[in-house]
Length: 134
Image: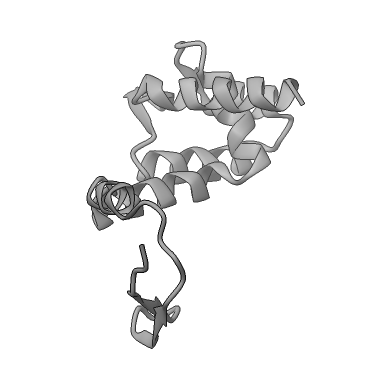
């Protein structure tokens, strides 16, 4: 079976760069259609991209690992666990909070942080286990 597939490449600004046609043999057109139909929505992919971008920092991974046990930690505790300054810990915690990965509560002058969604802890454990198996 031969398929003509037209694809548009996107520039960094989101505009179309060019349109290319592929004239190679397509061995399983039905599978390709099903997989394409099952692709996540653009907004969902963008949220996942943002989450992975946030996780692409070793310090933020340390912060998430510290919080993955389920306990609330204050900025000072996070700083000590990650071996970073309090201002650096505050910066990373704020970024993770802004991305809705962390939740927080104030208790007087103290702010306590925790994971908003346990799936991030599960993702981190899975990634660490995969690396350990190499």
